Length: 212
Image 1 (tube, rainbow, N blue to C red):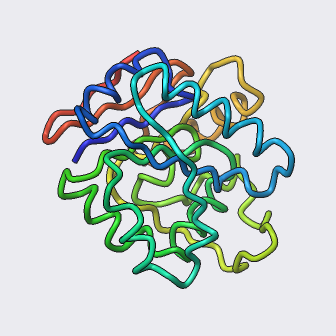
Image 2: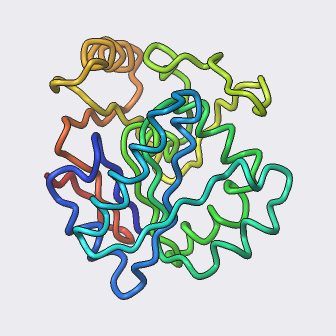
């Protein structure tokens, strides 16, 4: 697998994501974690496209809502992409979108096979873990945008086993809640990797390290 899981934005080592992509620079920009945030979405699309272009990745938005109930179409349309970049927002909204669109089927298998680089920050990183349990102390699981099922998807994509805690001790509005979440995970013996803004977990095959 090739993963770049960042605390916030591209972090301080975006060149590492570009290196994972190699010559396959076409990037699917997944913004669905922000579906409940209204007019923030248009601005965020432009900002993310620009940031990815700065490291040599050519991004276009792929709205998972367009594929709800059409998993085969998503698999076909993402075939030419070398990278997925999933932005932050609400982890539970993003996870619902991935389930409803079929992303966590054939697309996730491409990631596990190393054929597709998966990158994301904040919510986009959190959904790559094995479970979202515990994240409800930071992200409201019942904030459901129109057109989404109300059922909460607690299972993550399972790309990494360790829980991730973005925005740890960082100048971010969620930092205090994240620190409390890390303390709770630690008290229960749950392995957790706390990432400060600027840091990212880089996975390249059997190798993994924090960069930033």
